[in-house]
Length: 105
Image (tube, rainbow, N blue to C red; front, top):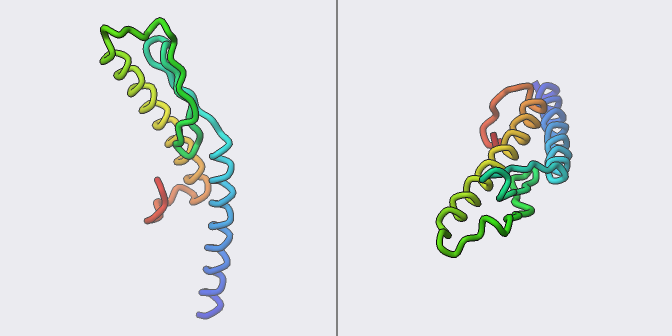
């Protein structure tokens, strides 16, 4: 029984090492999302961190700030969604598709 527990601990350590490597890789991957026909562009990494927001000056209208806010929000949400998909794809490959409590799926 102790041997089985030791094997399980080794497997868990291997999974943890792979997860750390995957997190490093996710930090390097980038996703891009746009809204307003490309007028607002958001770049995020695979860890769902927003790295860049670009706004075309043509969309900046002092009379309609609400539209710009909506475009930025839409692009940010889309970028985070794409980054989340990167995470899920990486984790499902790591866990063989099993849903493990505590993992960010």
